[in-house]
Length: 594
Image (cartoon, rainbow, N blue to C red; front, side):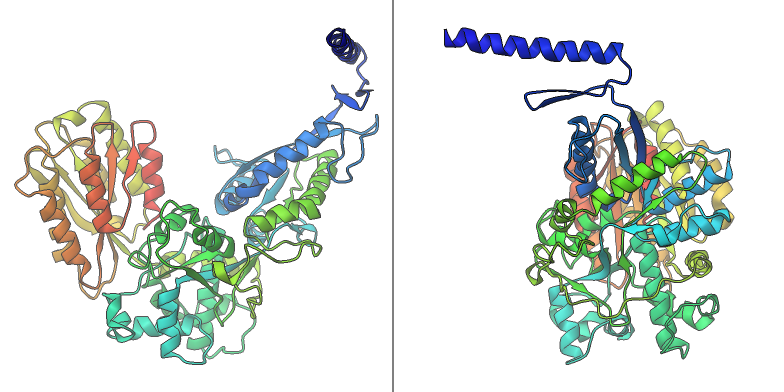
């Protein structure tokens, strides 16, 4: 009998809810039906807004957006926790991540009405640092963002992530001193490099990395810091608190930035790659510019490689930048007053105590004072909450633009060989798509770099020797159009000869980034050299001042992953995987290394 009553109650509830749904369809203004604490929040008018946020915010914002939307679906205001009134509208947020520099360009294009595919029209733009909001206003000549109203949502100092063993060597050499760019450059300027600090390091060359300042917030803030440091030590501006366009253009200052950039092993468009690469340990990079939360991520063991020792957040004595992850609400034709009001509600939710606790849990410093600093912002994870002691002033947009314009003048040059498998298995679409991808790769490289092309099947042929891309781009593209596929696969011979050629032809005084992009779809079938010969040559070159790193791309399911992985491990890189669908975008990303 009891079961029959339960079934009856469930049936009645079902009928009541069904009637509510029916009424909601017949009566447009119907918003809620409540029975016994159960709310059917159906067909309530909705204001839809969108946000594009920095990639590192994805660790929490994706869930925050879902919780916000779910709360409205349940008929509850997520900010106040109160039930919605009949007259209240729902707010629905859609979000995605995007590199700050790329999104900035897309918003500028949208505001200016540019006829291009690179257009974005969000309601909210959340870059890592407010400099990008300034640049949008500067480049459009309009107040697209009211900077005084851009709300910080998470704080992250930009740090130099340095291995504890390396930092201790520098401290031993500079007892009692605060450490900054000045001490890092001492290692570079020492004729014996690391070997003057300890013979156990195994090499004298310093390896450093940072992201692209045209795209990445961390890269932009790091380059600005380098200009500040160079200005302090090289132009007699020791007490200068604000970076100026004149300082950025000072030849002595630019030479100083060049000396810092000479430490670069390779660049990257995104922090994502560096988080994984540096986790391999000091043999790959000695230090790298990261947001504090990224360093915590690595020390927590979340990267693919478990770090062999702890990374320490070095807050340079010269000063650093705090990324505030501001919510900039767009003032443009595509954003209505209603959407602006909804965006402010969502901003209030993200800065609430509940959400800021999630911000902290993901390694960021909360902006809500009610959330106390705590784990994971701990010394055990390499962080010092009493730092940074010196925060750099944000330059004007004119100066930020000048820093970016000088980027190609100060960045480290590259010497890159494209090594392409043209064996019979590449015939048809595989070769056509690979050639198209390599052409894209070439167009993404700065024209000051030197690029060469070698192909291999049964034989090895250097089709285009290493030359400046500025003078060689047309010929290189024409050569790519002429390649054809046949014969067997002399992969080891191709790589060995290209390594040997690149190593012998590099000017020892020109400490460029040296790399080989190896693209192959199969196993070696006809080489005179073997895998051991190739690995030994890579290791022999690494003993010098300037290693050559090989980036193998496994093209297709038949690629020899065992061999390619051995080559990548010797080069301290990783095998990249590509097929006809994604090889072009993959090579576009790899081009940002140079």
